[in-house]
Image (cartoon, rainbow, N blue to C red):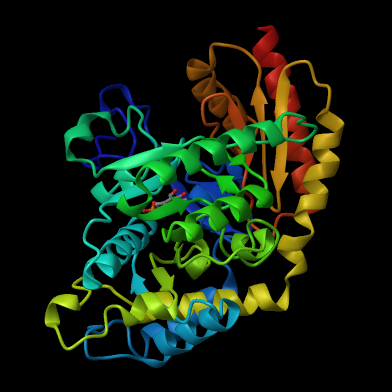
Length: 424
Ligand SMILES: Cc1ncc(COP(=O)(O)O)c(C=O)c1O
C-alpha cells in the first residue's frame, strides 16, 4: 500500500507498513487481517474505559444529532458549561476553565497564562520557566521548550524559550537512594531560585509520573517540597496532568494523590475518555483575575476553532459519569500491578520495577537499549500485545476495563519475551 500519510515520530524512509485496525472493543483491537491485540497502553494513554465504550459512543451520537460544533467566543452550550462545573467541583481551588483541543495546546495555554499573568501586573521581568529533566509536555514550540532537551528538540534548539531544568528524583520499588536524590534536586532548585527567583514566571511538572521519559516516578514528598519552595519565591506552579488525570495514578488527579494544589493545571488525553480531542487548562481565581481588566491588552488572546467542541464535552461528561460510578476500576489496579511485579522481583534481566496507580514500568538491564525497544515491540505484537517500550523501559498504561486475568497474561508475556530476547 502506498499511503499518503506521513506518520508521527516515524522515519518514513524505512518505516514498516502500519497495522490496519478495523475495530476496537474494550481492551481489544481487531486488525483488518483478523488478528486481535490487547491494548496495554490505552492507545497513547488516552483510552480510559476501553475502545468503543457504548455509553460514551451513545452520548456523542446524541450530541451530534443536536449540536455538533459552535463558535466558542461569545457563545456557549450545556455540555461545555456542565463539564466546566464538574471539573471545578472536583478541583475547587481551580475555579476557571479554558478549553482547547489537545495536550500540547493545554500546556501552551498554561504557559501563556503564566507569562501574561506577570506581565499584566507589571512584572514583565519574569520571562523564564523551570521544568524537570526528562520532562515531556508536547510538540508545539512552547510545550517543546518546556520539555527536556533531546534529539526530538535538537533541530529546533534556536527557537526554544529560555527554560532551566531541575533533576528529576525518580524512584522505584525497593529504592534506597531516593531521599538523597530528592534532597539534591531540591537543593538544585533552591540554588536557581536564590540566584534568579524573580526571573521565573512558573515551573511546570508532570506530577508523580513523567510519561514519555519512560514512566519515571517520583514521590509526593518531592512535589510538596518543590511546591513550597516555589511559593516562597512567588513562582507559579503548573501541573501537566495530561497523562496523570482521570484516575491514572489511582486517584482522580495526581495533585490529590500528592496532597498539593498547583496554580494552573492541564488536562487532555483521558478527558474525553479517549474518544475525541479535547483539553482544558484550569487556573486559580487570582490568575484569572489578573486578566480581567479595562485594558484590552490584558486579554488572553488565545483560541482554537474547536475550542469546547460540544461532541468532545459530551464525551467527557459521559466519561466522568463512568469514572464516578466505578472508581474501583482505577483504584484497584495498583494492587494488581504490585502482585505481578512482586512475581518479577529478582528477575535477572529486569530492574527498577515501579507502579503508580494504573501505571507500571520496568527496565530491561543492559547497555544496548536503543535497538532493543523496537525488537521487543515486535515480539509483543507477535504475542498479541500492544506494548510500546520506550528504549529499554517496558510500561503498562491499560484501559480501566482490563480484567485481572488479562493483566496476568501481559506480565507473563513480558517475562517470556524478555527472557527469549536476552538469551538470543
Ligand atoms: C504529560 C504530557 N503532556 C502533554 C502531552 C501532549 O499531548 P498531545 O499529544 O495531546 O499534544 C503529552 C503527550 O503524551 C503528555 O504525556
